[in-house]
Each structure stands twice: as C-alpha cells, then as structure tokens.
Image 1 (cartoon, rainbow, N blue to C red):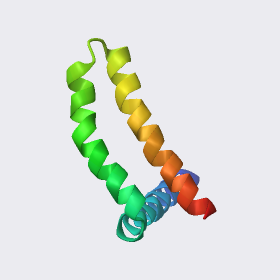
Image 2: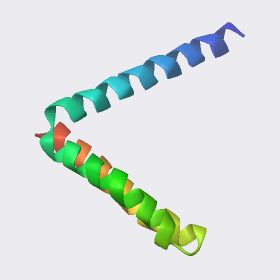
Image 3: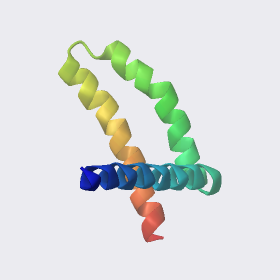
Length: 77
C-alpha cells in the first residue's frame, strides 16, 4: 500500500515538472509560441472539417506532433 502512495507522488511531481517545462518553452521560445497560437486557431477547424473521428484525430494529431517536434528541437538546441 505504501508503494502505491509513493507512485502517485512521483506521477504528481513528474506532471509538475512537465508543466514547468511547457511554461518555460512558452516564455522563452518564439517559434513554440507561434505554433501554440496556430494550434489554438487550427484545432477547432480540424474538429469542424473532420467528418469522422479518425479524420479529426489525424487533423488535430498532426498539430500535436508539430508541437512535440518543436519541443524536441528546442531541447536539442
């Protein structure tokens, strides 16, 4: 039982570290900010234009992949 409690704490800490990293990227990376703005504009359009759930997932998923790749690029730089 104590082991399970420790696992939840680790997950919460990992989540807070991830959020801190995203806040840092938004604050310091101009390209990431631009892509987040485009994501906010284009994601609803992806839901609007996608006829099936698969199409919607592909349209919005490609936008998410762009954000992930930009974060990886920033990490490499």
